[in-house]
Length: 73
Image (tube, rainbow, N blue to C red; front, top):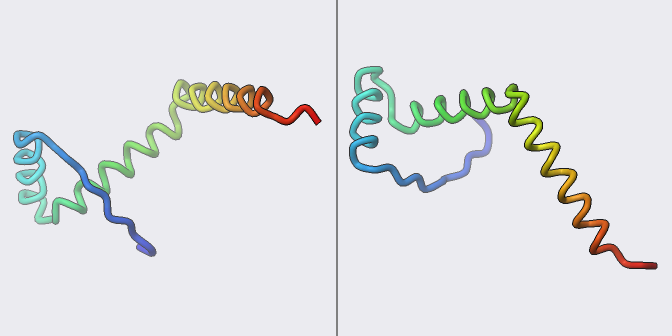
């Protein structure tokens, strides 16, 4: 798996219980279920044209900020 990073995730108790139940039924640790769900979500977003448009818009806004803050040299 390579280098890992610990993160803190806060869930409401009902969702945490349901997540635990899913992990238990699958015979997997909760962390594995969460990792897989996050990986699927990220891949879904990467392939979503609307998300990619939002990334492009963000890049354009940041380029404009850089232009405005650049030295006038």
